[in-house]
Length: 224
Image (tube, rainbow, N blue to C red; front, side, top):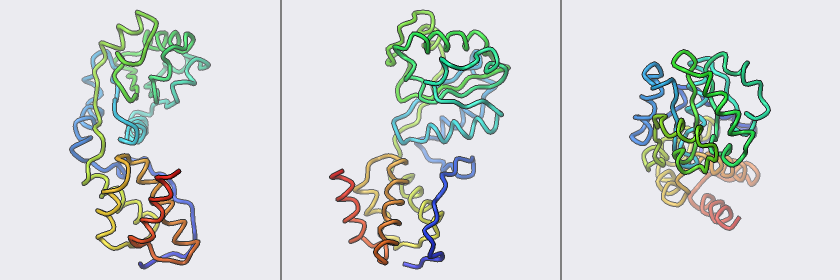
């Protein structure tokens, strides 16, 4: 292993368009985000499992559109009239289900939004599965188009791992990447956590990041 920097500097999580790795699992969803003007009634729900890149894409779209981005659970306490003055992103929108104030706030927001003020919602599942209690809100969400992200495949996870190591200025043997991919959870967030743990252990013990060290870390993480 060659470490270009010997300092244990915190790695920042980059969520720009340039940092988003395009793969078969996300290319269709990315195309729909790029075609905001075609969204019926200016709405889109971005659906995908945990770690598939929903929040990253939400940040990319928010930057492109100069949109307000907020966690959905904060919506009930927001100034809806002010928020609806431009594009909006609500992350983890399914968390509003069952919260009367949150559902009412989203319904109010939908009344303001349209093609000129688009609304992007992210969620793990389609709106039909959220458990929305407000009938009018449920029908509006059901009518919204869906962009789907699949779980990352081996090629995408491999590319993410390579990039994460490069961001930390750590060089690893090429055969380490498929070893990690074969044993790790199918989540981009898991890749970030794994690389951080490997880097921390290697620094603390003055060891290179080898398959042996990786096996120790992954065994510990699987037990935790």
